[in-house]
Length: 380
Ligand code: SF4
Image (cartoon, rainbow, N blue to C red):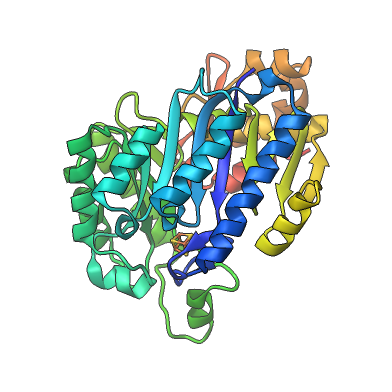
């Protein structure tokens, strides 16, 4: 058995105005050192609990936060902890999330030497004014320069994240953003429709009437525009919001959508292993205290019941363009899909939200726009 390993780095230079992720802005180096000791301890706790064959990595994903808030030595220390406890023999993909202003050319080279072969770059927009309004600290030029470095050192799998539905953003502005990403030859593009989350600066500004965001139908039109432009430009829409050139899909995320086992290390990280699922504490101090006392730093956990597992199988498979193979569902759960979901499926087909082609169910474009509603309707 191989697994995916996710490492959460909960630090950022500052807090973006729309962000609700668990991240600590501008922490002291002492806190970073404490965090590194914490994840080393959590990894060791797992290596004592799991069998050696369960410590074989297929994919590694270092996310955040901003992983490259850590300097080269700190990242080396993190990799040393991982390499000392997990087998890299079967590893095919090692991704790190990078913000363009937090990594130099030498640091990028050092990451490649550590085994990183895929980068997810938090570009978000190519408009400096917009970036400033979002509370981002990088410039569009830094994104371009970063991609040049990648090409120079032979890192040929670089994804770009973009946000749409930003305040005062028009359809033509959004098209321009997509054109920039395409012209930079990003091999992977992930789209995020802006959601004003509770507790963020933008949510408060919106409540106070100081921020105007596009209506839902405008956001939906932007999504459609992106699907058309990216697919015309040679990108495969392999997941609702993810587009990749041939062979450049994120294996780590595809494995997640295919419900393969994964382990999450660090505060706020989630795991799904051997029929159990849990999330770590979103509190670095408490996280470190627990692991240093040999206690798993779990905030909440649940045993995945059969009903939940069936629903997840449907919802996660439908996210992918390959859809849900009914024979696979039947084999996994020992029950006929149509017995459980036949009526619901008929209703969704009539509404034009899903299609059934040769016993493979996929979302239609309309279904992708209303994905959450479709998934909720499969809840038992
Ligand atoms: S860099 Fe990412 S994780 Fe950090 S505050 Fe901004 S959006 Fe949130």
